[in-house]
Image (cartoon, rainbow, N blue to C red; front, side):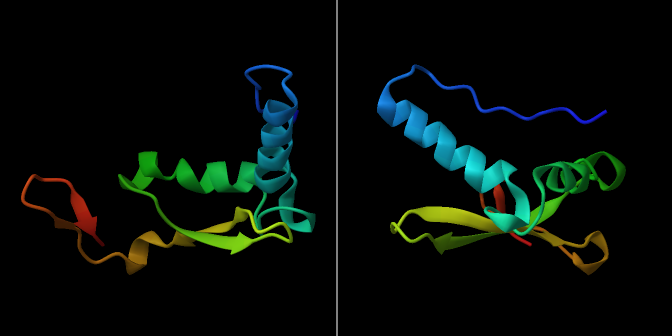
Length: 96
């Protein structure tokens, strides 16, 4: 059984409706209108964090015909290609 993903809007204000429609089309519509990967597949890859301890994705953006920035894809970085993690002086992640 497939679960239908929904984006909840704050109100029915026309601007809120427009924002929700933009996000739904970008994230949930799949390769035909949105990202190059289906949302369900992205979540499956992200859940590999529980098996490997980390899951890394490169965020790739593109501009649509109205000039809005949209997610094109979250490109998976396979676990076997990650060699090291670098941290800043406060212990936060710096780079991979």
